[in-house]
Image (cartoon, rainbow, N blue to C red; front, top):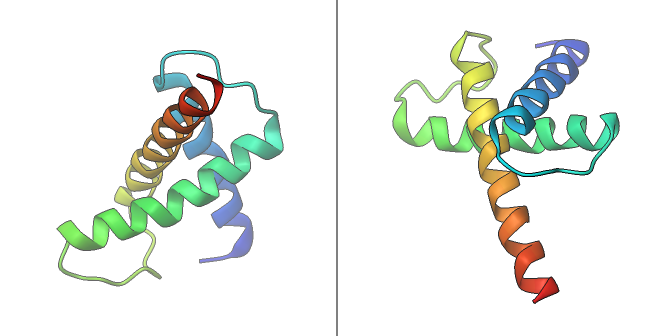
Length: 87
């Protein structure tokens, strides 16, 4: 997978996750991109537990789905951490 495709998938996954997650996430484009990239790694790990192929280098439609799921997990954990730090 090319580096540019990885960045685009990360950005799209971050945008979708921010649209799905309720509440306000105050982050810019770079924060959304970082969210998508981290979510891609988390989603890849989650997907490897469920799928049996275990090959992370193949681009398939589930890549964006798992990246979005991973970004949602990262957003949920970040929201829990920020709630605990502020209270």
